Image (cartoon, rainbow, N blue to C red; front, side, top):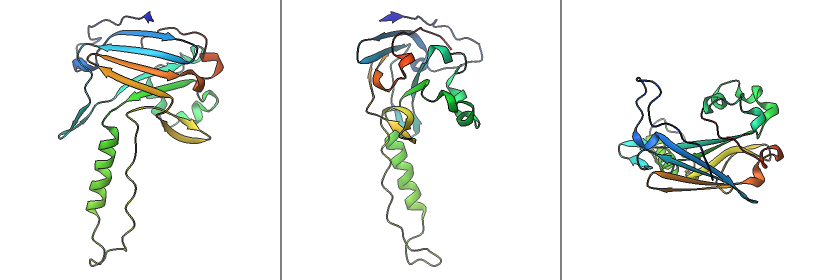
Length: 188
């Protein structure tokens, strides 16, 4: 593993970040099959709570070295023009998200949405549609395109939280060839 320490001090006095989101240490490694990330937080990794709803999500991003300056933070992937802006760079950034309560929260939202619809036969009610399947969101995922369709790939990545550490194992086979042979640690 290659160390890449990140200082425990907040960058700006206006930044108020819970301890379980302050990254103190970052270690990376790889072997023939996997890319490994260990993020150590100041506090313990927490799932969050369903009541009140407070869903925690932890993220790491693996970026091709030659595209590192284009993907300066995860927010660039969420911009309205991101799809067209990064069309020729598909696969050069792989965000990894660990959100253990995401599936439960999505299922709860689906239940609440179904409960808000008027009952079949009620005045002005439309015929009841069959209940939609509850979304199955992996606790650990790589959002990416698979066969031209958006996917929350939970099979190519595994996450394990243990106290202050979040261990991530990413299957290198989903990485483009230019990302498979080396890495650098960059704090962004």
